[in-house]
Image (cartoon, rainbow, N blue to C red):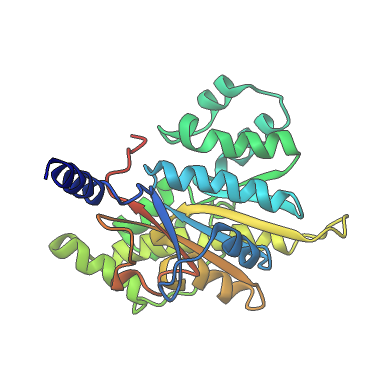
Length: 289
């Protein structure tokens, strides 16, 4: 009898702790679990990878670096990011060329508070590999100008200032579902000018990517552009993706999105179709800030 009770106790304990702890699972657009290798095989075929992250998610940042390293094994890369604005490209280039150190970059450029922990590894990889790193985003002051005074406010800028923005007027479709989702999410605080401010960011980032793809290349090695952005900027094949297709329809694009769930063993229905690949992270994962 004692032996039976011990056996039952062990069985109950094993049931309670049977599940392996996994920090994330990768799903395809249909919600099927896929391996990292399968994701990489698909992304490697695309000219552009839009890596949609959660800005405070360590799994996003780690996988961004791993995907970049693995693509670099085969392709010439250009890296680019939402987190650095176009008018800071000169300062970023000085850092990439070793003309200034990190302290100099911190002083001269407008870097996000989590740059050193989350984006510096990507910039340093570009620096060490001799790759370009493109500051793709519109300077925030111009997006704020749109939010306050509509697109028309950009017409008052000088030609020098307009160089930091996608060519005006930008294509614009306010009925895109993700822009409508912004309005719904913001409730009484939402307005048409809010989604226009989002659109000018998306358009400028897309324009930055397309400009690089259209540049003549001295090498015959295949080129891949990997862009790091908040997941909302490329989810459901809208945002940056939509604008790239407006500017350069033939571009092949792979998308990655990040989501968090309490249970990552099955992708929530609302995230099916969010991207080519969805990184589903346990919502208990530590945040970087």
